[in-house]
Length: 337
Image (cartoon, rainbow, N blue to C red; front, top):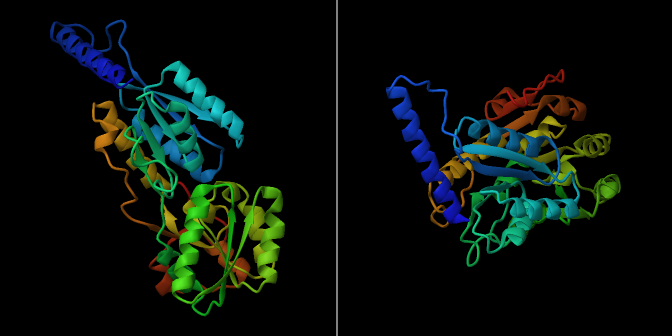
């Protein structure tokens, strides 16, 4: 499959040379040689919610201007069996570069494309090592991680609640990316004598009960990281927590836009831009084995002032200088601007 990419790139180079010759002889630059091949780049997401959609849209926007690339989009809509089928179909169809979004999608891509030689560029995998996406057998895999340092998470909470006593960690136990983030945060709390409780859910039907359980255990703050399932149900999550006066902090700007109080975490436009840049390097002939996976070059801070109002929290001017206001007190959203 690597040879196919190089053959297609050679074909594109010949096509470009022929087009230049046509133009030099008075031909129209709009004409293109018949049989010109493009590289098919498939972007696959496991479900739809603001974060994943933003990643997809950013990658697409960055790549749409590349004349050598043709984009294909797939969405499993939260169905793991459908995700497996999508990956198998893409392999059968002979895509040239695969871009799976989130940890589960990347792991499914690795399983389906094992031995194919097709480059896989993952997007938003919290812990590539733990997910089995690095090392021997992963020479065709690279991408961009959305890992958030645990110390930053606790510092985030302290910005708004300097006297907090106990953190409640809420996550979906079936999402490796979410489990990894929470495990790192718990380890940090253990090392620094910070009290916490945790609750995991198997499906969104458990979300309200799990949230209420944590609050009954005396937590005065809640944190959820890059959890795709919970991100798709932020209004339910925050309604339960805010009715008890407990703030919800999270791992992505989209989760703040959908009701969370604040984040120090992922700017998914930045992440999508970095993913697209790697795809273009591979499309130009670089091997993924020569491109180590990247982390975000910087972390973003966002606050939802409407959520602060619901909680009766005053966010002072000094603190606001360190945060981007994603949602105004009147509900006006700046997400995606």
